[in-house]
Image (cartoon, rainbow, N blue to C red; front, side, top):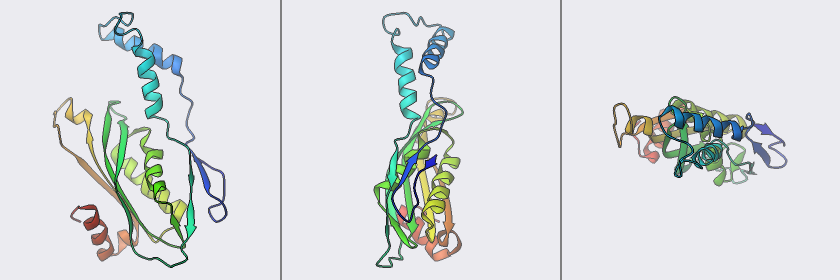
Length: 203
């Protein structure tokens, strides 16, 4: 993703830098898939399906641009900041099926604090892609550590994967939990325990 400003001066403009989606090619691919599955893409009910599917995937794979707003930590706040139950929607890169759930994102502030809505924006920045949950969790934590320079970062994602609930084992309702920690939240046992307790998980 591109970064167009200095964190210490003005807000960073965050843009996901990815290959442009070729919508006409995607529509042709969907039509070919329907044919391969024994369906007629020219039938009354399916004639507009290739366009709809291509547009839907383009939307699910395109995160919104945003400004990363930070503020000086003038009061010297040094306790955990945690945003819980941030909605997560992404696409399994193995089956191209959705997985969705919630993210809990926390950090121990350093010299700057972050506008709270930006925690959800960072989750979306990486979730709107073909993903595996393990990588997604680590990308969010690494990005916050690199760009905010806090004393610690913790990210937990809980999600249900349709590739598990709709096919194969068909374990509907099963949720996968992943975590990634940096700094004090990783190194200090009491801080680590506090973070997991606040997320509702047992460390």
